[in-house]
Image (tube, rainbow, N blue to C red; front, side, top):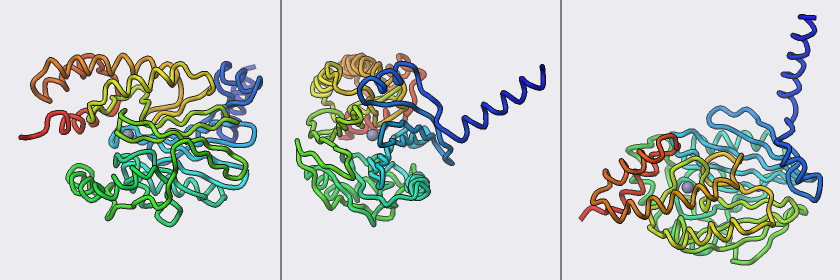
Length: 313
Ligand SMILES: [Zn+2]
């Protein structure tokens, strides 16, 4: 009997490595009823992690970077015949790993979409500079104006992760527009005054997925450098009320439990807004945040945020 047990375990291990693992029952039941995700599993990648969510006709491969660059996500939407990449990482090294992963899927890269100005979402798009690069018009202007500055200030801490030059989006996405690529529909919304002043969210109605990017963080410190507490909270409350999606993909952290992360984010923003009003220095704000959220990842984002909340005079 002992041998049977061992071989069964080996069989299960082989099955897990070679195919998708069926996800949490709630996800499966949602998917089998009326669209939405039907399973989730993981795939190996050198640094960071890769979660694959499977739908009827498509898959979404969600990469989360190591903590070093802030657990930032890139999502590869795999249609029957093409690939769409959402966001390009803070690192050309991790960007290259995603490029190699995408190449192995054996389908042409139709486009990359950059959700907003912050460099953790476009530094690595340097490795995709040969494919059409889409963004909001405001994001295009912001990266064009500030890209070189972001590259210079990032070199001391990130070194080889930083691109040698900026890559400015060359295709425009309009607010309220919808694009169809190989039968997969994407509906775009321009969100203002939240984590960044201009942000893009992408809704996939057939898959019932909201790609929220930095409107939502999961188990990571939220970047509050713009001080748009009220606008961001309003956006999250609207997201919480929205029942059109089964799965929301965050810009930092894992996909799992990301509906719950909306509530967590609202509490976090309320806490930081109140703490910011009380303290005099960035060090005090960081101490208060770390005391309240000791287990959150991406603490380097708190340091960057404080450069903006407490500018040197
Ligand atoms: Zn970010």
